[in-house]
Image 1 (cartoon, rainbow, N blue to C red):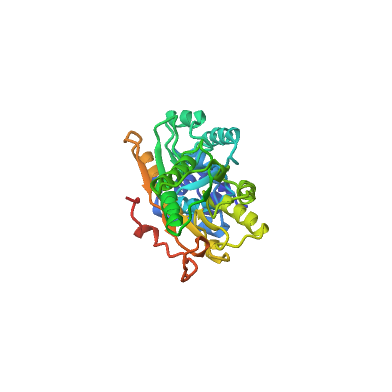
Image 2: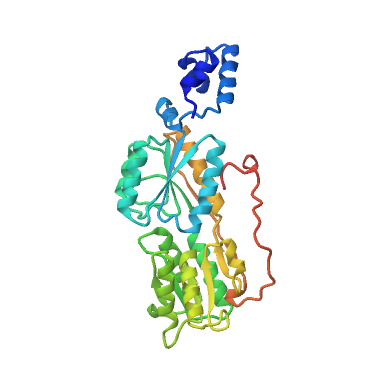
Length: 354
């Protein structure tokens, strides 16, 4: 691979002149700059991004830490993050905490050593002291998907409460009264809010919430599988099941199919999170859809605003969910086309969702 010295030699200039051209510094004659650019092209020279970051006053690097990168939800959020940040000249450094607080803390330390310009994080816990220290150190940060209790920070959320409320109301309207729930962990605000939506819908309909129909999982496939088996194996199982995220939903569906239960004739199912495969299932899955791309886009926008104005007041953006009614809940379903990515070009998108 060509080096900066090779470029300087080919162009007949000093290494410092090549460096000034690469970093768009002034005081380089047009004729010299053209010779340098021609040499770069002829040698196919690629400057070291690490060296550029070390020389620069900012790294143009954003850290992104997810609690569980295997969750497809976060992949779609990442797309929204990267779409805007790359347009603004930033690169992304990704860390997967794997639902482990110590791993998350380690990634936070590593990213600070990498001199990131900002951080977007879906923390494993809402009471993370390490995250609070990062924010209080002055590093611009945005939290997504859940609130944190240890620091005041920009946040992007979805309306988990109304999403689950509408899902349960829909099941009740279809005649279900024994509605089981596999909720997320209560130590996360997303888990509590989705569970509270379930409780509110049951209360509004004056239906009893039975502990035998209530389960709490860790948002992973294995939890959905085990907890669904537990629920449907009861002598008087639920007639409908609400599952609080996509991974637990796939686990629950596996358990239901292995048990030989027919959806929706013997048990109706509604999941939380809408992915492309939801309409490919038999029957197609009713879900609460989150605007994943917009979550990432809004988080990136908030972070860039924070970098530009470090002292501005913190903001919380709450995006709405949408109930996608398909056949798994027992409704008549006329079918729909598979989702096609028609996201408008970035420059045509609003700066941030209202």
